[in-house]
Length: 284
Image (cartoon, rainbow, N blue to C red):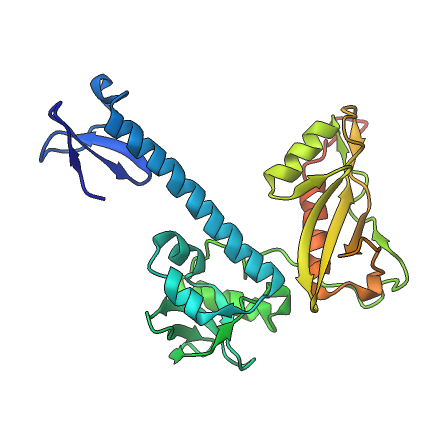
């Protein structure tokens, strides 16, 4: 961003998201001079920085939503948003799949005409022009360990957690008629508020007595839910069982839970449980 000259004899700009000052043509100052702290231009830059942070977070959340739901994304849309640094940072290096299921690769660039520059799993740079692409959830990627190793060799960095996202595969011997999983139940928390705060801090929604996350899997919307305690009851609580519901609120049997919904539900339950109070000492 360009430097703005102020009458006070300084120039200001946003540098790495922070309002920074310098003498004209001089080096940057470590801190804003007192005379500039309430300056209108400095305040405007602060508000711009806050907006840019919100915009970046919104882009990451949207791309994460596309990935978790495996929704087809028009390449024309990617071409339109790619010049925006926040969108580009969220999308670059993500694994994508074209209209052909074998068209798998890491997104490196998008032209204004909607042509995608992709590094395929053979290490070749190819250009694709599908009408839509999907950003597959990692549990759907075959040979995920090989994909991770290949990404490491290329030095790829993903802003949206995709190929290194923790995944859970539904066991082959799951009780298909059952409706809940208790692997991560019983995690003790000092208050219900502390558990709810952990859920929201991890990006999950708290609704009533549950922490929830929505996923679109196998063509339908499913919500995973973990019991965290009665609202307004701020005594000690513990994580409950994990279950899933469809768009109409009906409980989904485990045999009907799709691979993405299973993985994301277990990921949420495990993340909540990881913050539990752990006893120490002889009686632990």
